[in-house]
Structures are given as structure tokens and as C-alpha cells.
Amino acid sequence: MDKLRTGIHLKPAVREEFETIWKMQVEAFSDLLQKYQDVETSPAAESADKILARFDQPFTKYYFIMADEEKVGIIRVVDKKDGSRKRISPLCIMPAHRNKGYAQQAIREVEKIYGSSHWCLDTILQEKGNLHLYEKLGYHRTGRIEKINGRMDIVFYEKDGSDPMDYSVKTVTADDYDALYALWCTTEQSRRALNPVDDSREGIARYLKRNPNTCFAAVKDGRIIGVILTGHDGRRGIVHHLCVHPDYRRMGIAGHLLSLAEEALHKEGIHKVFGLVFKDNEPANAFWEKHGYSLRTNLNYRNKSLNDLIPAGE
Image (cartoon, rainbow, N blue to C red; front, side):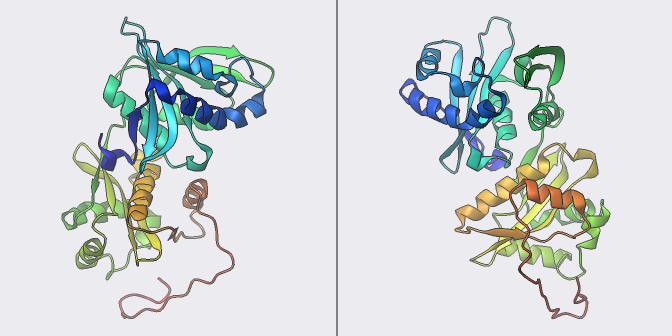
């Protein structure tokens, strides 16, 4: 499968790995079990024997969600091939690997294998993040809600037709400059970050020459709708100009691009990355916080311009 496009790939699990599946599932869902006390329905409360029995079902397939050859989650697909809906149950990402866009990418991967239509799934109504994930991927509520106990309800979803947010990802090249600059100019916050030297055609070409494998663009219908520039000095990585076109925001594209950039930096031996965000850009600061980027308050960021065209404060 195309690792560059997704940042993850799916590895089919075999029967002998049922215990690994069980242990990962218990760990991944234990926090929800503790929160909602849904002993009868929680995957964390299932026995290893139940997992093993599913491997004998001809319509069940388990996959490990792999990132850089590490098992970061599990997804199970039920496809009876009898006209009934295909089902995802369960899908889980391990605690240490959440908020990186892996769940969204895993769903896209199984849809590439099984097709993007005629699906169903269910999730906890009180978990708003899960609802947002499925709805932005084109799943709609059926209207059915099942009360489990006084703490939680299960809401049911279906999906038919193609994913309206089907896009690909490519590495950025110098030939993309005009499209990138036009994209950065679509928002006031992105325009503020540009300067006439570093963000000129020559400046971006120089940056991409130094960082040919760590900059990515999201492409839909031949048009660049998102971009991230990342590079490093051999010790620390830095994110520049992460931007998604206003028409395509809140669809997980920025998180997807960030996860690809982090993976690419990690492959080049970089173990820490940082980004600069305007203090008054509240949506951007919330995004970085969500993706695990802590705010440093014990440092002063200082710079010095070596070019008169670049003001010292920019």
C-alpha cells in the first residue's frame, strides 16, 4: 500500500496473532471502559477466546495499523458479501499514538481495499471526537440510538457513495511554487508569515533542495489544497507554512500532512520538532496543542535579520 500517501499501512493479522490483538484491544479501550462502565459491550472486556473465534469467521479480517513498522492500532472489517453492509468493528489507536490522524487514514485504507460505499459502524454518542471523525469521512447517522446505561449511548452510522474528500498527497517540488504561494495568500494569517526573500521563488526552491523528502502537499482534482513545509538542521525539525485552503478545513487534512512530515523527519533521524505560531491565531494554537505540541514559556525566541528586505521582527 502507498505509505507516502497515508503515513500508515495495513498489515493483515493471522490467527496466531490473536493474543496480540486481544492485548492491544484491552489496552486501547480500557480508558473508555473505566469511564462508561459498559462491561457488556466494551471491547476491553472481551475475552481472548472471543478474538480467536473471530479468526475462524470467513467474513472477518483483522489488520494491524502500522506506522514506521510499529503496530499503532487495530481495525477489523466484517464483509459477509451477501448484500449486507460492510462493518468496521472495532477500530482503535494505541494511547501513545493518538491525535496523529491514524484512525482516519486506516478507514481510508480499508475503503481502498473494500470500496468506499455500503458501510456501517457504531460508536459512543458521548465521544464527540469520534462523531466528528466519522462524519467528516462521509458517514451519516441512521437515527438509531441505543442506550447502554446511564452514562453512555451507542449511535449508528452508515455510508454510501464515494468519499467527498478523496485526495492524494505528493512531495512538494519547486514547480509547485505558484500554487503554494496562491494557497498561502488565501488567509490573512498565512500571508503574515511570508517575507519577500525566504518565500520568493528562489527562496522556496533553495529550501526544497535542502529538504526534498519532508515537504508535502494535498491534491484534489489536480489542485493543491493543503501544504506543509518541514526541514531540519540535523538536530531539530521545524514546521513552516502549514496551510489548508479555507474550503477544505476541518476535514483532517492538516493533521494528515503533519503526521506525514513527522514520519519523514523521524526517518531522517530527527527526534524533536517545533513550529512557530502567532499568539493571536487561536485556531492554529488549538490545532498544535491537540497534536501534542506543548507551549514553551521558559524561552525567549530571538532572531536577527541578515537581509534589509526582511524586518527584524518578522
